[in-house]
Image 1: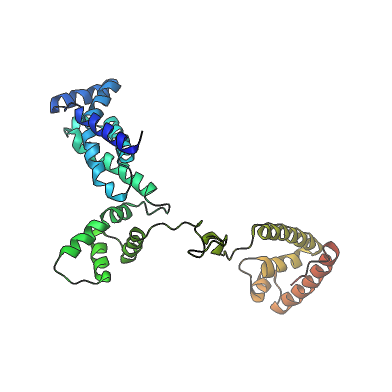
Image 2: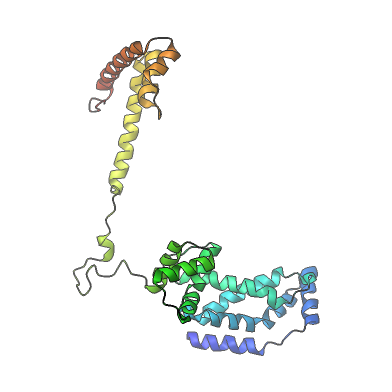
Length: 286
């Protein structure tokens, strides 16, 4: 069954569903809320499928199948029917409109582009209103630059000009496939993805670096065992801490002069080099 057949079937079914009066709608909602009568909930939802069809038609400009939009809208419609509170004295169509619209907009944002856009309320408003606002501004008798148009749209929606410019660029250009030929018209086997060079090391280099780092870390802490407590304290504070202490600070802590701290540090470094030469001859001590 092709998509257009599905569309016509959905439209026909929706148009044949009976309308509900206010009192009948209220009674069905009460049955659902108090007794979880699924038949009552489904009757409410079925009677408002016209609303789903009408709302889906407003979003056809995004190039997605009407049948898919209607299906997503029906999900929102059923969610609205499940959450509807008849005691608030609001018609179901008013309440359901928000749920239907939100379901369709989420579907469009997920499927309109392979690159996900922003999902904040401001970004959604920008995505769905940018074209309309730009067209309305263009209809005015004003000669505005692109920057001025973007600034006016940003002020109307409450986002930054940079956000408007980024979204405008996304809406104006199609997605580009990384599997497309690297050079248009040439079939040399290279694709766009082959042209992307990462500054990060290759996976095997990263793993090798991690292993080497862990090994050096283990060797170093083995070598620290050759130092006495004061030497180890000075080396850790001066060479291994994220924020090293000064000679003066360590001298004050240990009750010795900063010159004496410097001498002990120098002697401790010599002991570490000697220990590492025994434990790991290939490891150079800076």
